[in-house]
Length: 397
Image 1: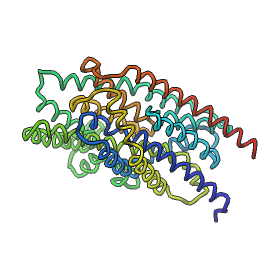
Image 2 (image 1 turned 90 degrees about the vertical axis):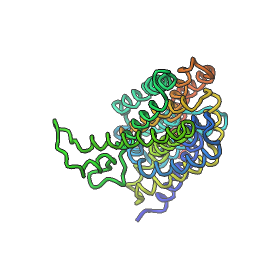
Image 3 (image 1 turned 120 degrees about the vertical axis):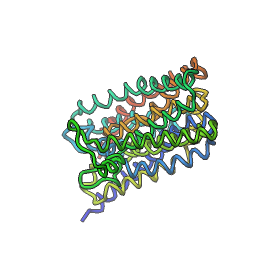
Image 4 (image 1 turned 135 degrees about the vertical axis):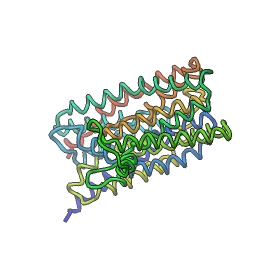
């Protein structure tokens, strides 16, 4: 039987988590996925906020477990988060993200939450998880170069006169289809964990193991990629402009789904260590976090969508497609690794990379400088504020 004090403390922590989920939905997962599509005039700001909320909710429920566990249990060694630590960490991070939402500057949510949780964890007496930090920082540093570089190369290829768009875009569609085939879904899994569409389909193909690799999932991935590319090629033959718009919206939907799977962990991860004391299943936390993301997307995301779509780079359909493809791939890699990643960093880097493919047209260097400083400052500020608040509250109590 859970005592009233423990239950009440968990309730306060859950409310702080819900506030964090709202802030993320308003400022990160709710704004970034469809920003390039809005910038290309493929969808309105309000409709983008509505759709991204629904897709983010689905991603949170179906893919949110890996990052949630990483945030809750892998950032500090030798000490589990308490309810008070979770509340202070979440309120600190959510407050900073909310400031970014209302000022129009996209604070990197993963930086802020990671800093806040590390801060309260150190204040509790835990030790730094250096191996996990190395993995996280490596991904954070690589994101601008990998995402921006791929976006730049893709945009340049789409602008090239050597390859017709009716050929290049279906090839890109096939690559995206192959990536979708490898996404791990909890609903497709069993006792051994989640499985991908390629694994499910490949298991039904009578193919041998070649050089220690099961040929079934590999062939299934290639087949699904070919189907996606073929469908897009047929659609392009019926009208290139409308086909590009539909492909762009599909990419935005995939990024929105991936954002939900990654970002919900930043909101509910600090509650995971508390589940040992309160009999609440993780799926219930994922649903609650998904609802918070959805509400944040519907109520606060339009402002940030406008900021990303119009202030960073003037995007057309081709550069928007170039920005979303690496964003989707990086997001799914982060979900698979269980590493918290900032969708603002992913999307902004890709938008800028695709913008430079046209000679830097519309890219605001001043805005980018302020944003990078805000990212670095939010990490340091979140760590220091959460550490100080926890020490202060612990002293008073």
